[in-house]
Amino acid sequence: MVQLSDLSVENRKLLEEQTIELPSWAFGNSGTRFRVFTTDGVPRDPFEKVADAAQVNKYTGAAPRVSLHIPWDLTDDFEALRDHAESLGVQLGTINSNVFQDEDYKFGSLCNPSKKIRQKAIDHHKQCIDVMRKTGSKDLKIWLADGTNYPGQDSIYARQDRLAQALSEIYAELDDDMRIVLEYKFFEPAFYHTDVPDWGTALVHCLALGEKAKVVLDTGHHAPGTNIEFIGAQLLRVGRLGAFDFNSRFYADDDLIVGAADPFQLFRIMNEIVSAGALAADSQVNFMLDQCHNLEEKIPGEIRSITNVQEATAKALLVDRDELKKRQEAGDVLGANDVLMAAFNTDVRGLLGELRESKGLDPDPMGAFLKSGYLEKVRSERVGGTQAGWGA
Image (cartoon, one colour):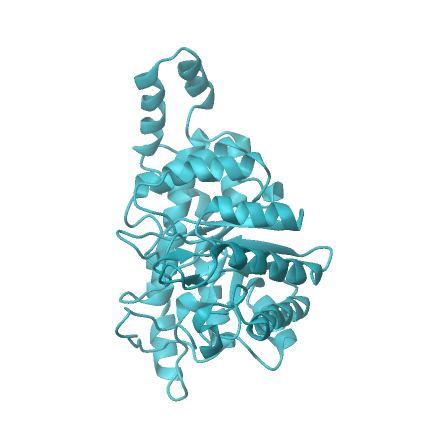
């Protein structure tokens, strides 16, 4: 059985210091296109979302930041929310804008043919930057649902010009230590064309904006069969991978627990991350979850997600890099593949249990949380009010 001592000192440090940001919306209700399901004990406000996120960090030791979504997480006192988070051992992280649920955005937001509506969307992002100043957040994540459903509905060319202009106005509002991280998705909800459908489009806009603009790579936002690790490697090469959104999908959507559909893909991605040195704390790549838990309990779903990423990372750190390079340079195709597969097929759960114990944590974070009584506590306390949910 592989042990913690099988890792080099350097790789052990990388695994010990690995952190993954949690999404506040993962702790609210969500569902299918047809129904949002309710769960007892779901948070009713951002303070309770942060409290639930802190439970994930408490038992995994690897989730010290929480992303907020505006306006879903609006509050009258963001300084109080920041203090609340820090009192629970976590920090407020990326601020996510929302320009896809207002009636005005029926024909787009930053790409809308109406100058008035484009300005409304720009102003919303300026509001998000004000929230960043109050929370200490450094990243503004932008995902747009903008696109068209039919040929001729609007000018694809003009929409890109509008987008470039709007992004430049938002970029100009950033403080020196802030970034824009631009997300892409190849389709949905637009059915003919999407305005930011791929990493190339996102990269073109980021390059035009400047060094404070990076690309977000979301694992679920690609056509089936896409080589996601290749995209990650390319963005790392040019210093433009700003964030990695982890999730999983079988068909077209992207909200399942990371690694649920294809754990080998997750390993391949982490192998490229490790190989490029991007796991280091100073790499400026923010690793995040972007998931909803429709059927399963929210906090256990997030704990499972964190441990899945940790397992893939540990396996990637066990790859014999010297032997792999030797096989690659010799043109030993199957031999090189064997080196990777040996690491992937290694059971690292005991190693990670040792790591957690060395940090004063229970080796089984899921079991420890379920025994804590926290779920029973919030189910009894959070009665009344309006439960938080996707879009609320």
